[in-house]
Length: 422
Image (cartoon, rainbow, N blue to C red; front, top):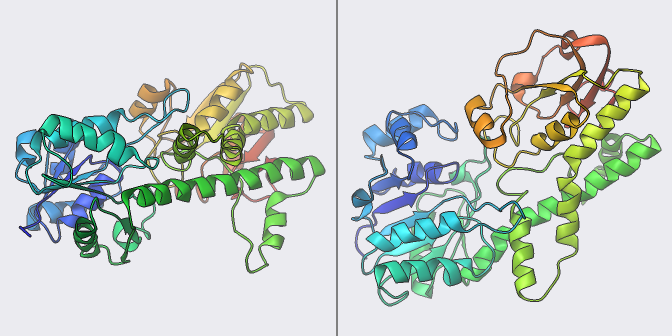
C-alpha cells in the first residue's frame, strides 16, 4: 500500500480536529470552500475553538499541516475524508446538498486506488446510493474497481475538552473487507480510544444515526415528565435525583435539544424508515416534544409574570445564552431562538446576552441581535437558557427589577431565587 496522504474536506467542528490529529502521523491537507476560514486557520486560529491555537500552530509548523480552498492542492492525496454538515430543510427533510458538493469535489481529484471515507451523519444507504454515484459520475471511475469507499461516523462533542476526537472510540467500515481493514488501521493509528470495524457501510451509518436518536427520545421523555410534574407542583430534578439512586436508571435531564446532531439525526432516521414503508412513531413523537420546549419555556415565563402581576406588554426580558449548548460558540439549530420568537409574540423587549455567540453570525442566520457584554439595564424577567461557565457567579438579581421572574432552563441556578424551571 502506498504512503497514505490524507485530505479532510470540510474544516468545521468535525473536520478540523480530525485533520489536525491525522497530521501528527500522515501528510494532511484540510480543504474548505470558504477562503476566509482557510486564511484564519493558516494564521493559527480556529474560530470554533475546537482546536486550541497552540495545537493548530504546532500542526502547521511542525507537522506540515496545510489548509486550502484550492482544489489543485488536494489532487495528490489518496485518502479523502468528507466531513461536511448534513442539515435538514425547513420541512425537516434531510438536505444532502453539502454531501453532493463534497462528492463532486472528490470526483474531480480521485485517482486509481484512492479511498474516500464519509464522516457526515446520514441514514443507511446514503454513502453508497447518493454519494458514491456522484463520485463515479464526475470521475468516470467505478467503486471497488478504480477506487474504494468507507464510512466512519463523526462523534465530535462541541465544547467538550475532555472527550476530544482521539479519546472517543471510532466506528469504521469499508466497501470491501480489505479496504475496511485498511481504513480501520488508518484511524486506529491516531485514535487512542480504539476503533470498531463494522461489517458494512450501512451498519456504520445506522449505528451513528441511532446514537443521537436514542438520546433525543430519552430527553423527550424527561421533558414530558417535566411538564407533568410542573402541573403537580413537584420539582422534576428532585424526582430525577431520587430515581437516579437506582443503578440502572438513565441520567437524562430536561432541556432544549438543538445543535447539528441530536436535533437533526432523528429526522434522517425517520426519513429512511418512511422510504421503506414504515411510519416511525416514537422517533417523531420525541422530536415533536423536544421541538416544542422553547415555546413551552416562553409560555411558562409569561404565566409566572402574570401571576406576579408584572405587566407583560412591552416588558423587558433578558435571555442568558443563545448557543445550542454551553461553552461553545456554535449557534446552529439552537432552540433558544424558539424561546425568543415565542416571547416576541407578546410584544416584549428582549435582550439576548451570550459571551460565546458571534453577533454577526446570529444576525445573519436568525435576524436578531445578540450582545457579548453584560447589559446595564434592569429587566422584568430573565430566562437562563444556556449554562455557560462564564455565567457562574453572575449576580442575576442585580440585573432585575425588584418584582421579577426567573426561569431556569438548565436547572443550574439557586432554586431559592428561581420562579420556574424545567
